[in-house]
Image 1 (spheres, one colour):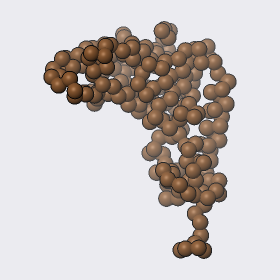
Image 2: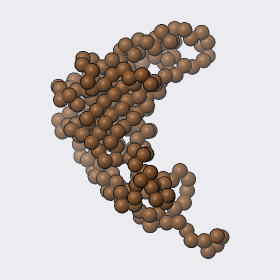
Image 3: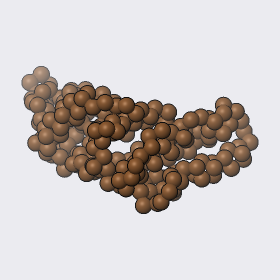
Image 4: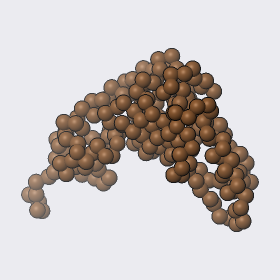
Length: 220
C-alpha cells in the first residue's frame, strides 16, 4: 500500500483505473473511465463479460457511430419524456436514445430485421404487444389514468405513473431493451393541459408492431 502500491490497470486498454462510477466486469476487474463511458449493453451481460468480449463490444460501438452518421434520419420522435427515436424509413433502420440505454453520445442503431418482439406496459400491467391486432392499446390505458387524476384532491400533490416499453432485438449486446417512460398526471390531465406525448408514443409503438409484423408503416 502507500507510495509503492501497484496501480490497478484497465483489463481492456491497459489504462489507469481511477475515478467514480466505473464499470466492473465478470472477472471482478474494473474498467477505466474511458472504456466505462463507451459501454452500452444489457447490465446482465457484464456479470460474465471478459476483456475480450468488452473489446469486441467497443469495436462494435465504433461501427454503430459510423452507421448513425451515415444514415438519413428523416423521421424523429422527441415528445415522449426521456425518449428520442429516429427512423430511416428507406434504409430500414431506427435509433433510440434513453438514459436506461447509456447511449446519449452514440445512439443505438438497429435494422428493422433485428426487431423481433414488442410489449407495452402501464406500470406492471401489459396493455399491448406485437401479437395484438389493430391499433396500439394506448388510448384505453391513458383513459384509465383520467379517472385517477380526477380523484386527486390536493392540488399541491404530484401524482406520477409510467409506461414500460420492452423490445426484443437480435443483437448480442441488447437482446432485450426495457425503456421506462415516466410522466405526471397533472401534465396529462391537470391544469397544465393535455400534452402531445401520448399521440407520439402511440405512433412509435404502432411503428414497432408493424415492423415486426412486416406491415406497411405510417410514421406520422
